[in-house]
Length: 503
Image (cartoon, rainbow, N blue to C red):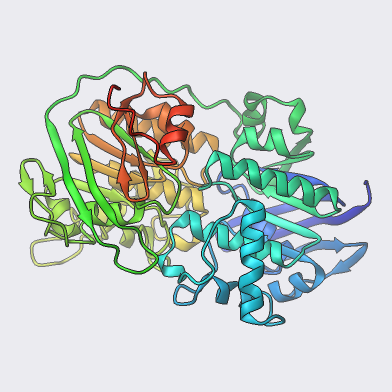
């Protein structure tokens, strides 16, 4: 079908220090899956928020179903038939999954009816989630499933998806693509933002490319290669990673039969977790979201100090009962999966977010060396190519990918003895992902011990020296990168590793 559903005409949106959208125009046909591709900070998310009514444009026109519209807010967008799944979630943490979805539907259905619909959608689309679970107990991946289910329950004519597969397993991605193609066949148009070039080539009919707030081209993605799409997006191909064999040293972090009861009814019990992390290696932890990653990371970072004294050993010292500050003093740094709220305080400047984990600019009497802190922040911005107006920019003003680069840079720059990093390239473009992975490898080559928790199998195979899998709170044996296959790791993600002792 070729009838135009949405037309964006010369839309411009300026902020005090940046032009997010500059005379942007694009057209989405009915039943079309239309990708919007661009590096972090290219203006994609701002444009989607304008279409969804979350941001008001300074100039230009939005035409929906042949009528010029001024969408004042998301409620009006949903009434028109436009739904959106944000990269950063808009969920009430103290409410249940069903209550969040019910609020998004405007209260037209009873809560019990919403619970039934959630179960039907979840089963049909492979987006498993418990409707009665409180959102604060969910992992990032599970929260994203809630957002997708909520959008689909609104039966939209235009569905906007901002990085919808960033924390989904390959199997769940395949199921989601089946759903999206089915929606398109029924006449629903889809605006799809992703940095995963192979996804765009596989799924999308048309691709509009943005750079620096402007539309720089349009193509049919299945006629392009990953390399050509990368050149259109960032002007070059990302450098190939060099994963050289590196001599490992002594064990610096040992997790010995760690067992912890879940903190809430929707959590996961940890059972006899065994991890041994050596100096100068990257150990990758794979697994489907919600299988104990959150509980394990809390125990390793010091946010959960209930473990036995001998269960967590850092450089021959028990740290099981030490908090995050004490563990950082011993050389363990940590990058959480939640950028906003845990990795950074949204309302604080990048400078003051440095102080969350770095103390070099704090004097003996607690005075902050503002000039030194600013220079330190500028160094991170420069070294990691963070697109920010200044060191004084608030964390919330950065795109998701640029905030991720800043947080990762903040922790890598200190050259820790042990770095635990969760979802290192979630929602970042191919150039930024290559840079982050390269920096992780460089850190490992400098004899840092790195533990990477990721649901991106390609990422783990690219940078890890060894891989383990967490499933239902249990940890598999480790397998070397050379011996690992995606089929093997995929079977282990279902808990099937009992016959793996010979590896």
